[in-house]
Image 1 (cartoon, rainbow, N blue to C red):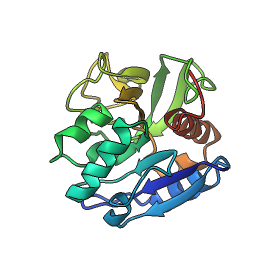
Image 2 (cartoon, one colour):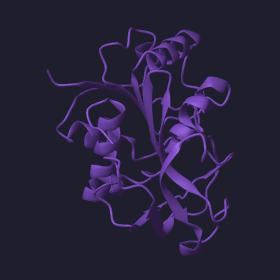
Image 3 (cartoon, rainbow, N blue to C red):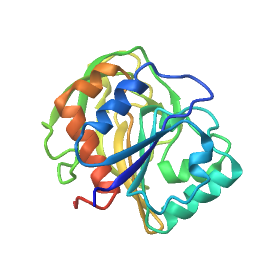
Image 4 (cartoon, rainbow, N blue to C red):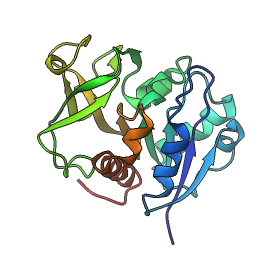
Length: 217
């Protein structure tokens, strides 16, 4: 039976033009059946049938109180959760979500080329990547540094671009456990072009598979 994903893309703040391309990319990774939803009611229904829930460039407050309860119960009981890019700009008013994801978005400089330092290649999201991955993105800064509370997989080399605000220790990609569940977050994925990039697609696939319990590290 093919694993199913719930890909949630509701936005109540900034909306990324790349969301349609991102949904298409997840659908064409070949490993999952995908239900894509904008309606918050999708998170109010039972989530047990999903291998993972993916918040794909969501923004603002996107869940109802019932949806919050469902998502928290799902994660704590062993569900997979994946946050992509602006998922860190989501549910600022729900403290649990910040804990679940690991950190919250603060700001970003201009969209520009830079270098990703791959710290941990023992994870399916990063094992295919070079030690230094040249990429173009928004290089999110976070309100807090999640290192110590998460397993950092990749970080930013702030010397490779203009406007970084976190300094020498700047996590970009990480994973963690929440209760019995698994959480993967990548801050990359701003532009539609990212979802056509083979290295980024493999990165995304590995992260989803890990969160869903389909790949080990």
